[in-house]
Amino acid sequence: MPSILDVAIGTIFVFLLFSIVVTALNELVLTAFDKRADFLRLGLGELLRACPANVARVRKSVKWEDGTRLSDRPE
Image 1: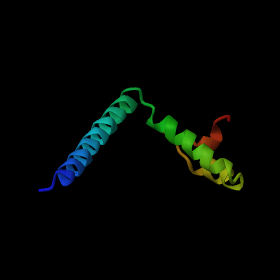
Image 2: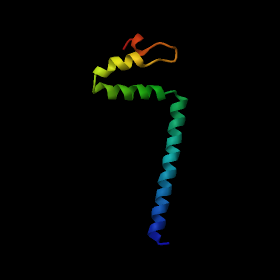
Image 3: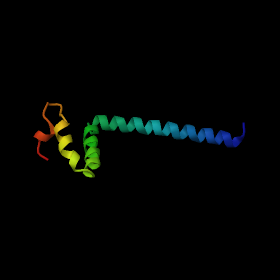
Image 4: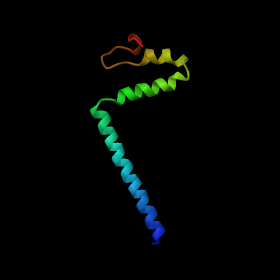
């Protein structure tokens, strides 16, 4: 096998392994600090900021774990 192909395969493997390890660590940290929902809420807020007409509809549809709706809570 040509040496350039060995280098390419090795580089791809290292990047794949590194990305899997970093993703696993990220998931572990986010789960440990219970931040996944907060980041989802922030991301949705940024997406909806571009179209304010959708905000009221989303506030009515989002339900919290305790059964209250997002529209029941203050902004």
